[in-house]
Length: 401
Image (tube, rainbow, N blue to C red):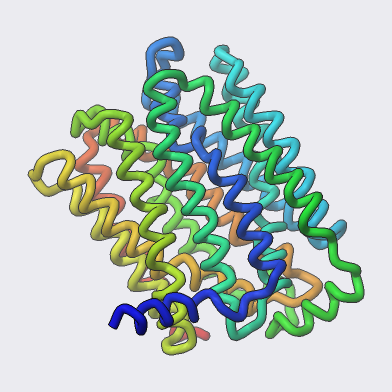
């Protein structure tokens, strides 16, 4: 039984290209320093900075606004100068900006540099998504995306768990670690993963894609998909903004415990996702998995309404939203990659990133205002209901393809 399970686990990682593995390693280096964004709200509302939850929500919203602009230009630049150069530039410059932001105490300057940092940092995402698509094959595209997510979440698990310890001593140090790991990822990309020649890249594109020969803005089904993705992101990103504040102020949990259960999210993804995706890939329509995962995320927020002990209910919530994320997000990436062609892949990747970024912009600001006007419980009911609606939207979209 054990040997059979081990073989199943091993087979989940076979058949992926060398470049896909190198991208994952580089992503792991980068994400191991992910400490600023998940603790941004706690940092801004801590002693010494002393900003309100609403002001913190504004800063996180500005991060999302910068991400929208960064994604747009990141996609354009990816199609124009190539994904390798865009990744290299954004990683290095983002690292420098993280360090600078950590030294600033003026609220207007924090807002300004958060916006600039996000614009640069998030321009990386369309380029990276494009690179994964280029280096994967149609039959293992979802697993290639899952490997990249595995690296992200393994780094996330390490980053937030260590970040929780660091935050209990010094929030400023979080910015240094995040910046240094960005720079290390850029140097690793420069040294280990050389840019492919245009001829080889074009050949890879032909092998990867099953293109729809139209502009991304004329692909109505994809525009609907981007809209529902935006709604999903609006809700999901509360996990990194208002939910940690609720864990601390509503459930009275420590930063160390918050960091530990947030790290559990990444750890479970590392242990489970590749095997589960290997089992599910190709068996059902992508939208079935996306709808189910979205529904589980909605249930996760509704669980926070239960009158249970803080540590227990926060653990249940993290487990439920993690399984929802595992089931939905890899197939979201496969959906857009299958619709792109060699002329607009960066634009497809950018539009998906923009959809996520709009949700990331609107969500923290709107939800922090909702909490101040009512309560966390009202917010959780709203998020659960919106995600249930979004799950129905993805299910409806299945009938349109």
